[in-house]
Length: 52
Image 1 (cartoon, rainbow, N blue to C red):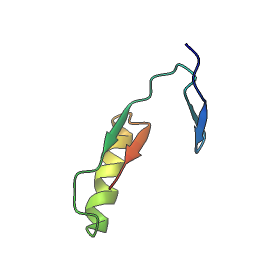
Image 2: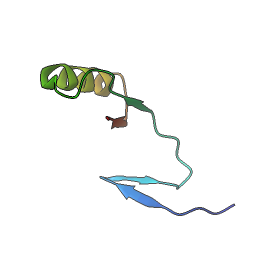
Image 3: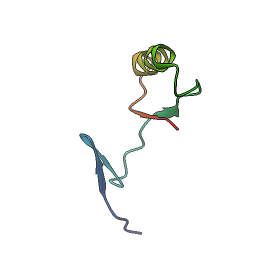
């Protein structure tokens, strides 16, 4: 099965590689909390961080 490849920053999605990803779960208006959580996820090896 062949799929479409999509570039997200310097990552290519759809090339068969499984990326470690997570989503921030603090309120969007809590800038310090979002930055802190993103840095923690990055330190834990997260390659894609989503937010809403």
